[in-house]
Image (tube, helix red, strand yellow):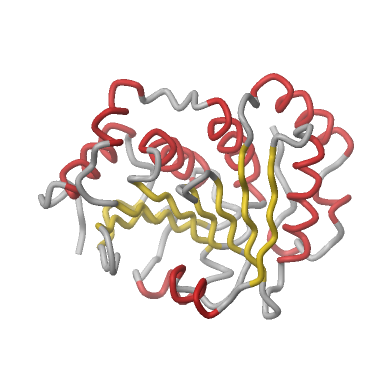
Length: 239
């Protein structure tokens, strides 16, 4: 299992993020699992501590994918900042509609779930066929924010659940993984004291509220999303 560079050492070169053993594993994984092209956008900025490391990492992943990963590097603009509600990078958007978002670097414990997300975005094997029709037909867009830290062992499991749901919905759900150390203003907004913390919001302005602290059950999260999109109070939400 790939466990990418820890948070406190992220500024090192790309070669130290992925060992040769890691690269061999990822190349084999992508050869087996990638089917369709996967568009990935990386939004960078001048005031970004980890943008260079993530850019290097994503360029390496694109090479290991036999160019199935279509990487685009974009500078942060006032328009993007307004849309994304942050003023700096790194921001990673996966999918044609950007339905999977990483606000902060997907490293540390998040590494394996990030790779798995890329595979699922390509082959669409999200495992949610029984919910797929309902998710695609949501009357309103729902945003799932999963606030994490790079050393949390449970966080990538919560992230992968949300990412799979977003991919199955074809853009009706946006899954945003927020790295609390890099974006403390977002963690503070939700008074995060433990991770993962999951926040659910419906359409703009995505004001939302904390749904659960800890690892949710897949069915629990899906049912909450369906209720929220219908204008109902999701079961288990906390103020």
